[in-house]
Length: 575
Ligand code: M6R
Image (cartoon, rainbow, N blue to C red; front, top):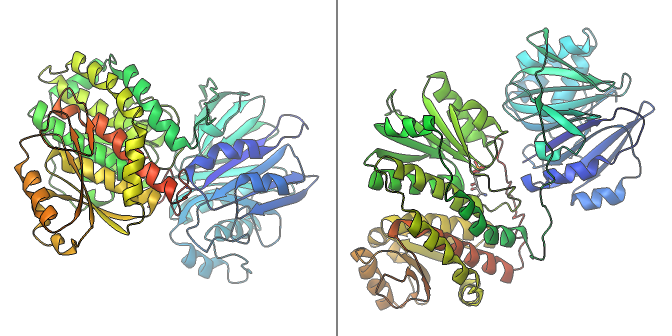
């Protein structure tokens, strides 16, 4: 979702902030913009296209700039609604990530004399700032805003007259990187090699940057930020010969899994698992699907009662106990639905173990313990390697209690992935058979049904083909009415014991559905795709790669924007 960045250089050297903004591209956006402040004048450029287009339009360079990637919430995708947005008197220019829930009310109460150019909630913030600055200094005005604004936000305001760069945040991430220069951004990925330490702002902290110094406040009192040292690593964001990041990331999975084979959990985490009577997993989207596998693993391998919940639904369930262990899973660590729940759990002193793909993020900061899956940046919006990695970490956690981790079968299972990577023609063929369809079912029973959920989400996300995942036995209770001649149905089968699956295949074949079977080699059934798995519960490893390839090649045939599917954002930072 929206990414914001502000750069304040230590001298008058000029800088193209857009190279840093491009590092936030992966979050997903539909328009972008930048403002350079030069000799008390704003120079603003916007685009409803990619950052590369903005680069072509931008004709200035400055040592003070703010920039933005917008994922539209209030107001359509247009140059007008793209940030930065000016206040009425033209003194302040803002970039904002998040949603102001009470913007209408605030507009009505304070800003009736103001003229609005955009349809955004952001314009309300910058005009409120202008409004309060008429009778207060800027810091007091920010304090007033911290009490008035409801919702999630991180914003940066550039002041034309003073050259100050003001900032404030609640719920949405904002991090200050300091070195020779100062970069303030939604994500540390936007930092450059000059950043040697960082400070992650807490909610309702605000302040300003002036002459390369940071002034920080909370509740009207100045506070000292404690910067943590930072080692810049220029993540490999090149395609390295691959056509898409999604493709590259699917191929990276094997080595990343290998790296985790011997990973040892720290003793606190082992104690947490061993002493848990019940484990509740919470996440969104693909991470939720990893959570579903996790709960299956805990139930089957450790006899610890476990269930998984979708983050945005969790608050509607209240049957959990004070001694439950909560495992929250999030690739980005910034998913607003999950942050909301983590905050509630934290306020009730629950044990929270998070599984994230970095250590510097909101969710890992809020949790009691964190496991970093360390999969490297995932740029494609569709999660691939992080699904497999998070599921693998959950598998290892579930093996702890009864000491069931069988390293040999994991090594063998991972070694077999080469066969999958070398069989792309089979996935391409399957993709060719399905890409013209409007609807499709993924069917499986038990464990395989959990795999189907991810297969369905992945296909929808990037191919835009409607698909449903369903349990084989459940189909006959209603949805079978959709089955007509040649309706495509893809089965995942990892276990001979799934009688419902075998019955369902017969039922659908007799109705002339187009049945495709993906199974492990221990299942005695003729299949379109066979994968090796050394252990039934590890089938998610080969299956995940296969389901990702099927989606990938289907979307490729449809000529879709695979890495940046429509309407989607990598990091969903609004509720
Ligand atoms: O960063 P998170 O893992 O918390 O993100 C959760 C979902 O938004 C995410 O998994 C989403 O479903 C992906 N685009 C799936 O490919």
